[in-house]
Image (cartoon, rainbow, N blue to C red):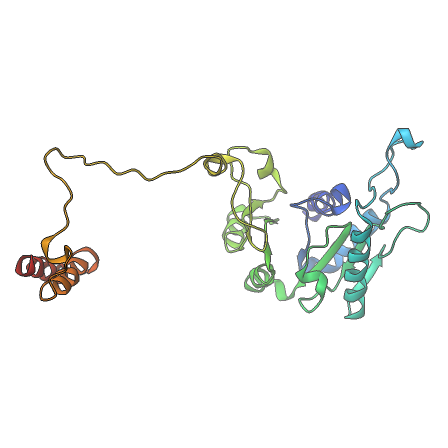
Length: 275
């Protein structure tokens, strides 16, 4: 049910004020539940408490969203929101620096009607902004297309009433990680590799893959069968036999890489003839 999904969406978008490597950048919602989703999520975002959570600064700690870590990030988030609104997105709440607070506080924001033509669809926001994208006609294929249209691909989540269908759709996402009816739980499983694809980087940490990344991997070859040693065939030993060297090499390639049995047999005969 929709009510059970909303806490995951809220956590994914506003944890650490959106400054989270695997935070939710885009929320794709199927058309049949799009309006209801906005009706339920916007009041929750408006109710978020923002401020300084530190008791050492005189705060009581009753805070849901803190500040941005860099002044420059405020400018980036503001520009992305303004570009989206200018191109037709609907701003439901937030969208600006909090005027009631002293510091780098950007108000928790909800944008709907976000489309691929908007900068915010294609760039990392890294701020407390929920960008809601409508999937027309509840089309699974269009959903996958919209997910994969991004140049980034770190984590992804899919929420559905059918785990099998969710997995089938999610496996088509070009992301390094996928959770079905969950969010970022893979990060807690240290036996799983963590990492992304495309502009989200390369390599992995955690899991066997992460351990291997910390190792110096080497390929070592030793003769295994006694009395059998590798040697350079006479036709291709220097100086190369110009009459037999190239036919010999061609036959060797046919033996190793020709997919047909007849081709491999011809390769063997060529090796015998030119060997």
